[in-house]
Image 1 (tube, rainbow, N blue to C red):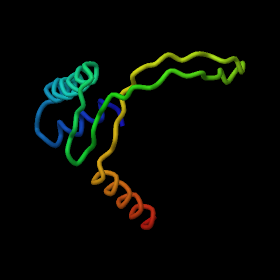
Image 2: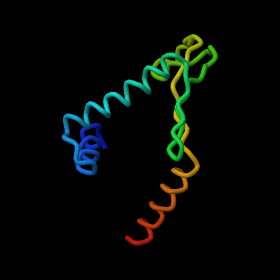
Image 3: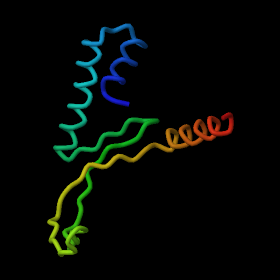
Amino acid sequence: MTKADIVDNIASATGLTKVETEVVVDGFLATVSDALKEGKSIEIRGFGSFKVKKRKSRIARNPRTGEEVFVEEHYVPVFKVSKELRTGVNTNLKEMEESS
């Protein structure tokens, strides 16, 4: 599913135009992005949480050449799905699998 698909689904469900919906979706994504860049966490109940984690420096290996490469300490955004969403996805996909 692409951002355009999300905009289409929300626009048809809410009655907003696609242009208005795209502005809202872009605003949401920008807000999440800006918060993560500032090191803040975002929790959306029933969906999941976005956080920034610190990764330690380490020695990695280039898979093509086998050469050792030093990877500096860095921060990465992570998403942790909520228990409700995880359970819902699992249940729904199992039901779909059984019915086909």
